[in-house]
Amino acid sequence: MRSLAAGLFGFLFGIGLIVAGMTDPARVLAFLDVAGAWDPTLAFVMIGAIAVAAPAFALARRQPVALLGETISLPDTKRIDARLIGGSALFGLGWGLAGVCPGPALVLLGGDGLSALVFVAALLAGGWIADQALRPWNGAHRKAHGPA
Image (cartoon, rainbow, N blue to C red; front, side):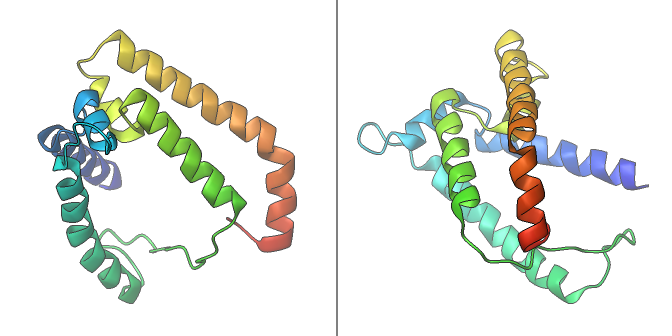
């Protein structure tokens, strides 16, 4: 049942990304071009996402388990540290250079061919390299601060 629900919600999310234009690198880059021909469309997508997510997170904070019986585990830290800032900057840099982020890239695998495949392969390789490079630091960080 969990796999079916995950598949259905993933499909719905992918359709939402397509309808919102998040899979169009030109639209994303136009949104990021605030000094040029700025396209505010994606700002409305983000506002809509926040409007849907905020009540859902408020409800999740009051529920011990999800609808399918899984324990709900939300982050309890509000710490802003170098790791968060660095990861956010790296994500933003990649988003600005490529015009897509990981979710839309997975959607693009279904029809964009080689460029989406190269992007996802680079994404996976970068994640693996970062995991290997940060493994000693992550272990020390977890001992000092608990899970991230």
